[in-house]
Length: 314
Image 1 (cartoon, helix red, strand yellow):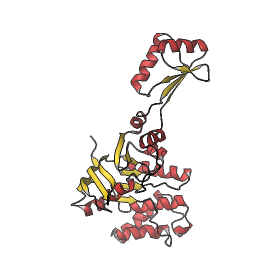
Image 2 (image 1 turned 180 degrees about the horizontal axis):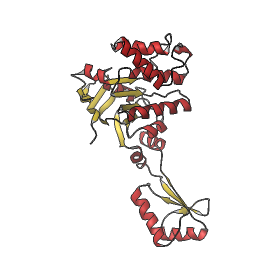
Image 3 (image 1 turned 90 degrees about the vertical axis):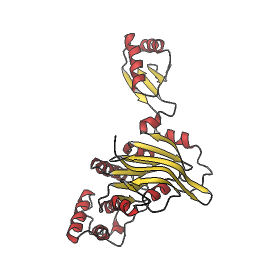
Image 4 (image 1 turned 90 degrees about the horizontal axis):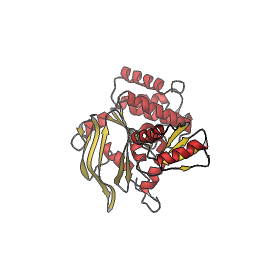
């Protein structure tokens, strides 16, 4: 069983009579990407702010990197990095100066700090822009520098709060690869995002938050199976094969393509094996097969419902 990097039990937070987090439980395995999803107002950012010691919880037991957050906040801060929704880059400084400033704030010896800066500039492909003011950087470059600044302290856990908002598709995919490389090196990533494809691409485990409560949790594939509408498409060489398949399966229908049958299925392996075995028993050859399951957009919209009239507490 994986070691847990973050655990929270009964996490609560209110502002006046507005409940933002209603006793949620979180378990984040070490060396993985954990994604917390939810509409605006669900409480995602509030959860990150609590777990990263920026604000206090009203109730709950929380451990981050093995430390009790209430009793050992300094130890927690020494183990984590935070990249918020908005860049922390100082636009009046160069990229190199921003990184050296972070090294000074972490009290690294001058030689070690400069070495760390040089390594991060190379890692994040910012060497050529290192001595240019960050006001001249593109959005993607500033975001990479922002994450590099988070890494100066060599954190074991990084909180990424909507890290690719506003980035173009190429810059977003560059950030995805950086996240994958960090996880491969053993870093734990706690991710919030409004891009569901991002969570699908990166996260091994996803929790969905709505109105301060967890409404679903699991791997991306497990969450997709919660929503009906999945099917298997079977294509045959001729219409006789279609007729034989419909008789053998006892379910399904012909699509606009007269040689293709669509069969309702949640896409799990056991069900697919049984389906193919029934066809094989009747010596029915399948030319092509594809499995279609609902995506995370379908899951999100079905579980969270209509976003109208929701309070915009983040």
